[in-house]
Length: 352
Image (cartoon, rainbow, N blue to C red; front, top):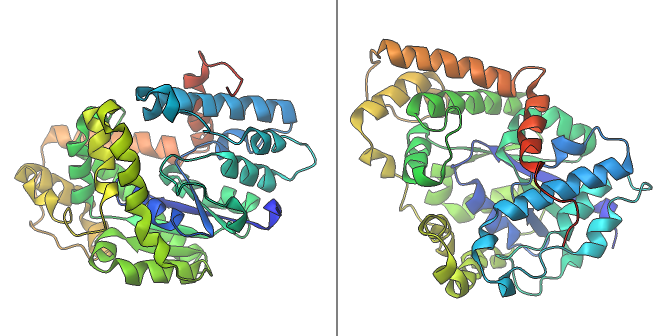
């Protein structure tokens, strides 16, 4: 199999906006292999030692395994998670960095994939990783052919999605309150606009609301953007999730069930207006923070400009500073590495 000829692409943009749903749909195309949210590239792209590259990659995958929902399942569901031969072949020093990442990506076997999938048909990898929105330039240095599907969703809906899943969100700066979540949405929105301007031929704007209203039209546009033929098999994506859930649902936590149940159903507009259930004050606050960018993406505002409390203004200022440091400053990649490596401290190297 000619791994070097496979094209490597990305789904980026703010999370909780349909990125997982889109990944599952595209993954059901016979020529596309959808890679979940592995943050391995920025961790290892500057490592020149093959042994160090292997060690860090192994540790990262072990961390993913340790934190995975699969740990809630009996042993029979944990087999065949990785193609070891292909995985270890990635650390051969003769391969370019780009091909190493392709081999690592294809070595991962996903539980929500089509049974007995033939990976020899794969011509495109789609890597879903929202955080990499801010590192497109670095990604293009490794994958010059890459194209980027950039997600955007109404910030009120994104906030409400966090609220619904609050019990699964660990306290992290910004994710636990509307000020932090809305400031972060602005960072993604502004970066999205800049990427569309800087790389018009490499970026496709995936607007969640337009997608659920006309999914077939949007998917055809995306496949055309990727230079891939249309395939009806993509609409079978939910059946693979549904079949797997039938087997494992008794072992999953309530929060995991909440996450995967929507993915086991066809695309619909069911959740498009859920955000209207939010507290009115929160809606006003979100619109206060995101107003300018909401208008640029044609989201209808429900309130006039509002006065906000001193406390909220202080929070907004704090989160603007924090997110600038974490994703805009020269230290951002180092912060990313430290955050990821922190979880490696108790993890062994070997892939079992």
